[in-house]
Amino acid sequence: MLGFLTARQAGVDDPLRLRRAESTRRVLSLKLNPDRDVDRIHGNGINTIDIEAVEGRYMLSGGADGVIVIYDLENYSRKLQYTCKAVCTVGRSSRYVHKFSVETVQWYPYDTGMFVSSSFDKTMKVWDTETLKPAEVFEFEGNVYSHHLSPIARKHSLIAVGTTDPKIQLCDLKSGSRIHVLQGHRAEILSVRWSPRYDHILATASADSKVKVWDVRRASGSLFTLDQHNGDKSKASSEAVNMAHNGRVNGLCFTADGLYLLTTGTDDRMRLWNSATGENTLVNYGKVCNESRKRLQFTVSRGCSPEFVFVPCGSSVAVYALHTGELVTMLRGHYNNVDCCEFHPDYQELYTGGKDCNILAWVPAPRAPDVEEESKSANQAAADLSSVNPAFQDAWSSDED
View 1 (tube, rainbow, N blue to C red):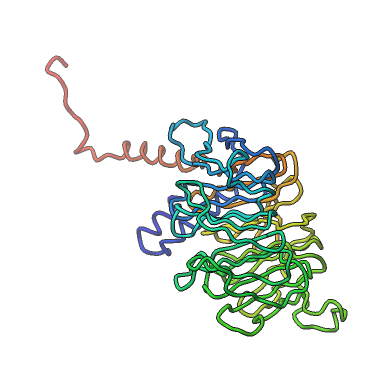
View 2 (spheres, rainbow, N blue to C red; view 1 turned 180 degrees about the horizontal axis):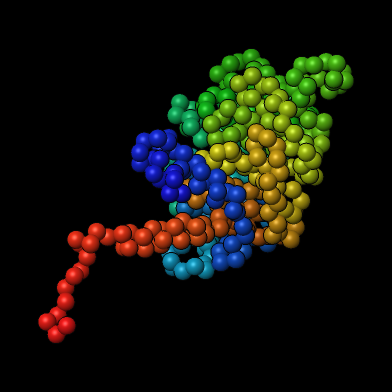
């Protein structure tokens, strides 16, 4: 640590190097925090969680019971042991509550005054946070598996929606209407994700084993379809051409810089793709257990070097090194399957939700004091005292002596 500070002060190192190194250390030391609880509100499994990016203070959760909860993650008591309180709930008693399981919740990227939820009741609702009433309701013909707002868009306010219909729906927040559909998949759309780099690039994953990348400004079809064999027809059977996985693709996640796209499938594989070219980077993550029939919410760290991937794997969360595929650790604490996880980039914390109705907080272990450095500094201080110039030593004596 002192070496990083000295090099930064001297201008030898990049100013961000210390920040990346400390963020990486914190992620590698993540453990279940016994002193932090999250209010248990849901009466059934937790399908989705989201932390707002404006203050990093409020967290949304949506459950299989149709309930939506907003938590305050701030520690007001300043005590070591505290509970993240639920500040408001759209519960079963509310007339506006979703009738069936809530599959996705997301904060509006620029303001905590609004959030969006979608459900198996075939609706997507845009909520006013203050009144907890829907300002807009979009109705669809089938169950809604996933929706996503672009985290960077300034020129449009489109919500991409994936349903049991093979067509991707684009809904406009400004007009309150469905303005466009993207056609190309042959089965239900399990996950949709906007690029955090370009506001017009959208990735979609389907039960037809395919992942497509779209430019929504174009009226024609998708830009490209991801192929696990990178176009090598000798390795692929005629049925497996342009398939990202050998099963349903139910998870999508861009890296923070938008340069790479991660996908997960029911073939127990996770793949890393170059988002610009669609090339499979062939990183081997080994077997990544995935039995989910719906969307799987996983996440990638931000600000670390290297970056890490957090993937639900049964009742645990597997942590992988992004570019090498190395399994770093398994986070164990849930009593049942984990369905969602969300990384908090401000504090390098992880929140996970599962079928045991719990949300768990995984927090970095505090940095242990460097004993070697402490002993060195103590020895140096003693040496400095012993080597004081005699001219400056206290030679005072009393007359009595």
